[in-house]
Length: 253
Image 1 (tube, rainbow, N blue to C red):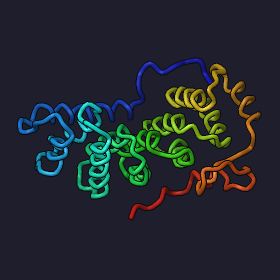
Image 2: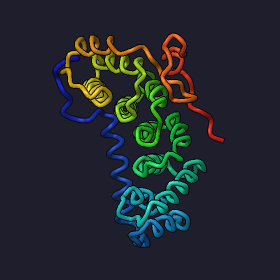
Image 3: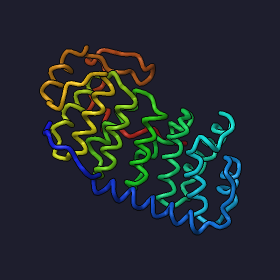
């Protein structure tokens, strides 16, 4: 891995931040009819308001733990957001913020819908879905994120996928091998994200030299994760990672 570190976000990341910030700001100033501070008031806005900016603000506010009195309210909010994402009627940036909020709520029931959103046609949605999957997914979902890391044409999506791989802490040796490869990527943000993910998964800090990480990863037992049971299985009995990477996430009924 090269020693240089990025001092700014990738261009696509900056675009994502600017789009969401612009719409959020618009919502904050336009929505004079947007009232309330509780999850119930935000859900009411989502169901009743015809103003997309007010709905956007409500989706965004539901990410704050301060608007909930108990966990049952978070469960209800997640159910509503999953339903809205499934309807696919909201604008692109709003669907992206729904994914982001579902990640913050950390409810596993959102996993299937988030998995589907990682395959969305728009990069804004895919990036936030990748980030959310790190919070609501399972270790075996790292293969979906590895696919995005390798094949997505958006740098922001690739970085988001790598960051979430680190959160899921998959013990699949093939995942750590791909992260070591990512340390040599031409994009600085991908190199740094790969290093941070390796540190998170292994609990070690071997510096920024990919060779040292490769030496360490070579000592890891050759096991993969069985998606049906999440139990370790021998690598030679598992599908190769490239096949898993190229597979599509499950269809959402």
